[in-house]
Amino acid sequence: MSNMIQNRDEFLNQIADRLGRKRISSTIVRPQWKYRPQKEVLKNATQDELLDVLKEQCKKIHTSFCITALKNLPAVLKDVVSGYGGGPIVTWKDKRFSQWGLDTFLKEEWESYEWNPTKDEENIKIAEKANIGITISEITLAESGTVVLFTDKNKGRTVSFLPSAYIALIPKSSIVPRITQAAVKMREIYHTTGQVSSCINFITGPSNSADIELKLVVGVHGPVKAYYIVINDL
Image (cartoon, rainbow, N blue to C red; front, side, top):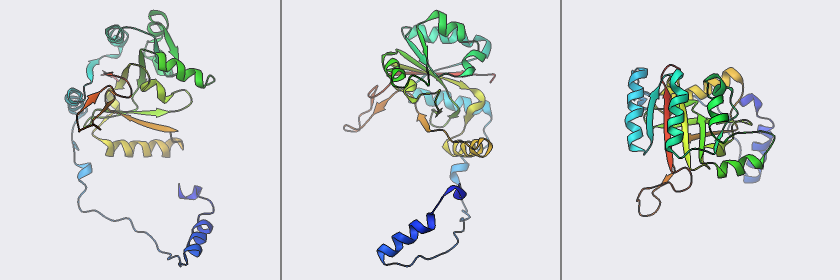
């Protein structure tokens, strides 16, 4: 991305002049680290093993968890939504909801709202009143139980943190060991598409805080409940 930076030298020269210093021009050589422990954790784990790690981590982060085949997703999602008290529901505007057979369920079974990029503040007000927010995880970190969401005009970030409960749909193929691999994957996406999400959210279960006397309180400033549904054949 360095070729996108404009007037850099002029800017830095001006700062150096103001400080009465001379800029030292040198070439930075990337260090060759002898040890890279960040790449060794779960390095050789299979996708099934990563799924097991994610499942166990969900127990630690107060997050409900289930695994389903794509054909059973509508029925499973219906049960989860019912367990959380039903709608209103807010979702991203994402063609995958239709591709995965969720259109009928979302639009006919419950009061449901799809994010509308033309409605600005109205989206946020609806998300604030929603009982459940549903999004799709683009990358999922097994080690920490974290879903990674890419925001764009059709995928408002408030869908995942303003409703009372949050449901993440997780393709099994999206699971990686940890944030190290997620960073590599995001870099690959940038090099392939030339685009970066306007906001990347890392969500690890329901909202919580241990700011006061290091005592964990779940459900502080966002969804009080979270449910991960892993789609085993995606």
